[in-house]
Image (cartoon, rainbow, N blue to C red; front, side, top):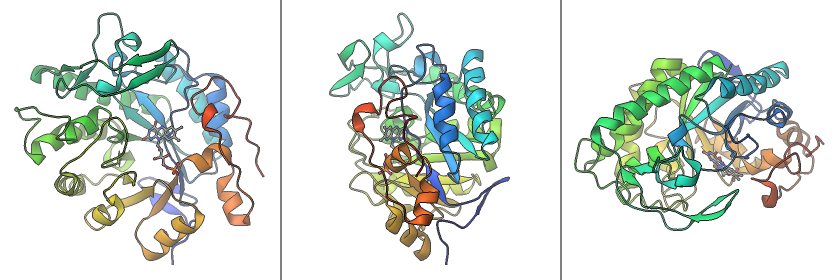
Length: 349
Ligand SMILES: Cc1cc2nc3c(=O)[nH]c(=O)nc-3n(C[C@H](O)[C@H](O)[C@H](O)COP(=O)(O)O)c2cc1C
């Protein structure tokens, strides 16, 4: 019977346990997208995770869209991340970079001068983006021209090469949470009539092209992907998730990637639907505690378990689970704040 404390071979690396730290935006980079020194401390404190997946990291200046998130397109960003990966490796850990483009979730104030948010189609998101200069209404994005799409795909490939240069052990494509890759998958957001819209195969095309660019840069055995069908976030609807995600999983099978990470955060049981279809390693996440995660491994419904908020407030989560030690609660007020409070000041048990 598989347990949380069994090792797992993930491509060329071996995870010492099956507790994965979820990708979590923590907003401690500088305004140029360079991780600050406390970012290295934060991740190194969590190096006992079987694998750390970094916070979402933007692939180009036009892919940004929140205040103080990190990027992976400039030399300074690579150097900043190198401090992080060195610190994690020095503590015996492993870390993948999660790459994303925010698409319509960006606001012009956080993009280079004159650059508008882009998306599959000119459909605005409702609500506000909470920036350092106050809440800003989302704008109607500009629909990407067909000729622009290869350039965005190439940005993911370049950022993946930068991830390797920065010392990451692999890359996770962020195809979840209603950002650009997810926007192409979702028929309520993508109303294109070209090769990237309409049929399920067409809407999945962008995700696969981006994934193939990442695979070309880092190799399939160091590439993962995250999905969160019907997540209640960023106006995601995924009206035909039942067709889109099994199709995507079958396409992934042909590529032999390291893992598929499913987060169950909406009215679609991604674990039940995708685990039987996907032939590689399946990481299950969202809303899980030790007992639920252990049960999923025992019954074979996942190969590893992803924990998010629990890793924020319990840097030594694997040891606490092993010892049955009490768990600390996280403080949502400090999730995206500045500085060490609620970030690097959670002690080990
Ligand atoms: C503060 C915070 C930031 C997050 N940022 C990201 C992110 O950058 N990329 C991502 O894929 N998911 C992100 N998530 C979602 C988590 O990866 C995870 O799916 C979610 O927290 C549910 O897991 P949990 O119940 O174990 O916390 C974030 C969640 C939190 C709480």
